[in-house]
Amino acid sequence: MKQRKIKLKLDEVKDFVVTASKCDFDIDVFYNRFTVDAKSIVGVLGLDLNQILTVSYNGYNSDFENMINRLAMAG
Image (tube, rainbow, N blue to C red; front, side, top):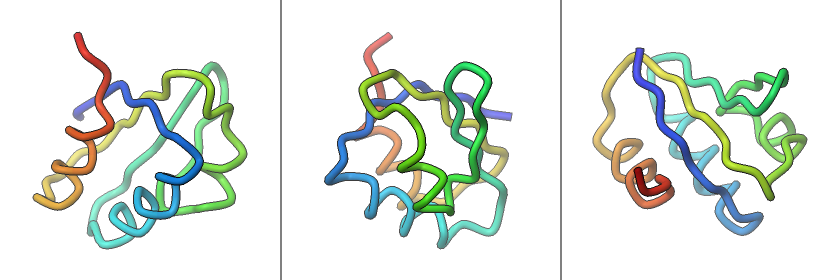
């Protein structure tokens, strides 16, 4: 299971969800006690986008990896 820390801006949510939806594996996004499906735009928009989010997934998709790398926090 991979975990990456990302920072999402409101204008990036749609692209993130669309890219996640093309993956054939589960992707979760969580912050504090809240966990949502990364393929749900309503779920992702319900998170506090001012905070650093954790993305957890177990699979590989080159487009998704590129998206995560662009959004990843340093460190």
